[in-house]
Length: 309
Ligand SMILES: *[C@@H]1O[C@H](CO)[C@@H](O)[C@H](O)[C@H]1NC(C)=O
Ligand SMILES: *[C@@H]1O[C@H](CO)[C@@H](O)[C@H](O)[C@H]1NC(C)=O
Ligand SMILES: [Zn+2]
Ligand SMILES: [Zn+2]
Image (cartoon, rainbow, N blue to C red; front, side, top):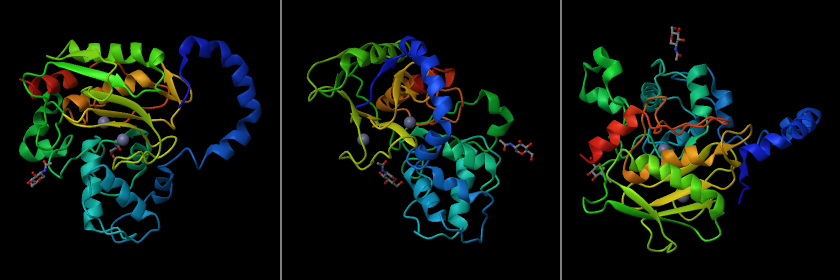
């Protein structure tokens, strides 16, 4: 379990810590590098293109399968047609140039810390490319088109279910987490038909919030510091897991992630939203260290309203 430190306390400590860090910088950056970067393998793949065989491409295939871009991939280092197609779909979803090759912009995007939920579920729905297939003339009206998505099969809470209860796994630092999650739930409540209420009964709660480490009993093990930060399940599962190996803060911080921003995003999944390719939306998959993102974008609001219309 990581400490939760509030921003103001942190500011007080900052000058002292900063001096220390400056002294230790060469040491720290050297020692930390490998452990804190699950997506580090991407760095060696720049410039790879179709037809080549390059060590590390099998890790890229695993990465792309994990996030929904490949299905039963061959565990080899060959840059084949399927890999190229997967990269093109990824580039479309993240508003990159669709080159099908591992250019620096694509690798940079892939290296960012992100949500563990896949961008594409069951090979059908997706953030952007799926919609483009359905609407070939979309490009003309790019700026007016919503980019939200749903999970495959469009799982939803039943119409009668407007009050969702949530609980923290016993042992969670509830006094820190309670106000954070309350604020996040209220923002979603303001734009949807849902109300949210904390309950002490973890077993019967609709939404179960916990910090988990590594392989934690579902099919989606966490990966240590960096990489995947959290994940949550589509309705009506209710599980919401933070990666306990991240440094979690309340508010933007220099070296960790904001619990409230991540709560905003994962609640969207708990309600049935998939990922969006709108960079400013809450449902965009990546979150940078040191940033806070709390405001629902029009795309998020359109998504939740369309899902429960
Ligand atoms: C896309 O390609 C154009 C032209 O080569 C370049 O100027 C632009 O920076 C590229 N954009 C991205 C996101 O890579
Ligand atoms: C996945 O897609 C297949 C074929 O389109 C469909 O039969 C199946 O029900 C889908 N599964 C889910 C979980 O949506
Ligand atoms: Zn997500
Ligand atoms: Zn999990």
